Image (tube, rainbow, N blue to C red):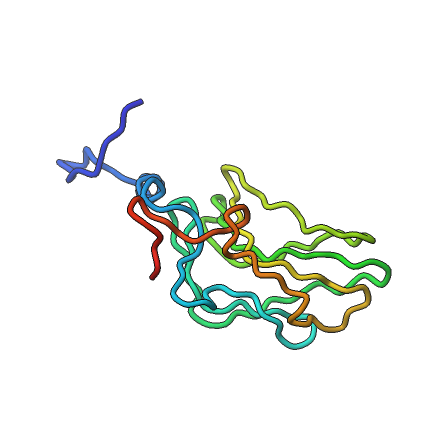
Length: 167
């Protein structure tokens, strides 16, 4: 099927959807975070079993995301026997028509690994950080948080056809 756009409508003969615009912008801008400063969407330790994601913006599959204030997210209670690694993601959910921050719980194990990122036509996740949850932990410490925002495998910086985009 051939498609072109975007042309003015003549008696309703041109109707465009958000998907049409997302496909267009998705061809011009890559998935990732916009780097306004070094803290854009950075994961930090908060109080107790909580983390904070700093303000910032991202781009997934032609759709824009913005977090304008620090956002606290809870970490699930630690296992009493084994540690686990949770993954903090920026998740595009096509069915819910939204992008939001979330924590994916890892599986407790003697040598844990973070859960895989989901990347399909309904869900696309960018991994912005991992949290090593020590067995029996009552709080998350800064040294147990790994920053994965700049990894081309898990997240990356937004790029355009021209060059990296620094907002």
